[in-house]
Image 1 (cartoon, rainbow, N blue to C red):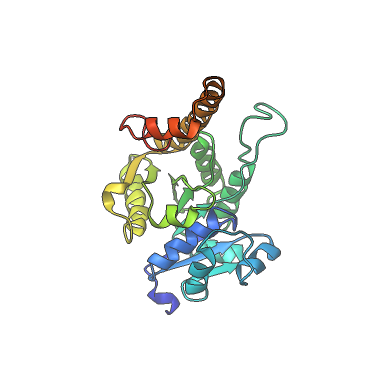
Image 2: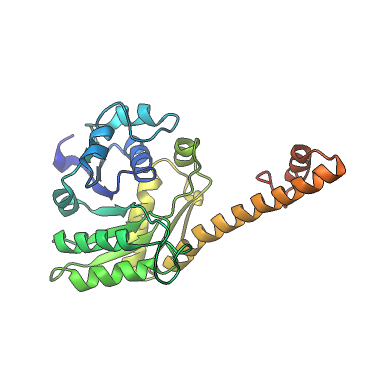
Length: 268
């Protein structure tokens, strides 16, 4: 497909566990969308351009092979890719802070802010910027502040939140057949238009009722709440396991019994 034939061009900053598989599934389902994953690591990009991918997920290699060089590309040409993109995903590591306020607990969003600064430096046209990394609530505010302070004259940005809900070992199925896709944006005409642009990409293979749209902060918080609820479930079943040992009950049978009900649900 010629460069001018693409309806949309997507750039993903970060060629890691989330960015690579997510972009591969988008490219596989949206042949009229050009998807380019960029990273500063030549080694990482080189691995994505080979059949020895830097991460393993069942089915990932086959999907990458089916779209690589067609409408999916892996590159270190960050500036050029940002410049031509309509939508830019930020999918970089947010490690736990090692110093300062929140050390040992809070996520370090420095990499997200560096990406925002690079986008603002390069962009000469309006962009939709999408948080894909797991971030603290209101990180979008920091990203918007960086973009606004460094933007070139006349260039505007819409920041969206689109958290991932992937599990190791089932990531490709989670992406191809998700329980839901969450997109948060500002509740302004421009923000809602940006949300619809991203939703229309996912709608090429996901039913609209499964694409949930919210405001920015609800989207960011929903990801953290989902993680917390999962941790509570794990903690609860671990506590029950100790009780089972004391009473000769079988924890797997307990899990199956309570998980079959509609209220606890099958994920217990």
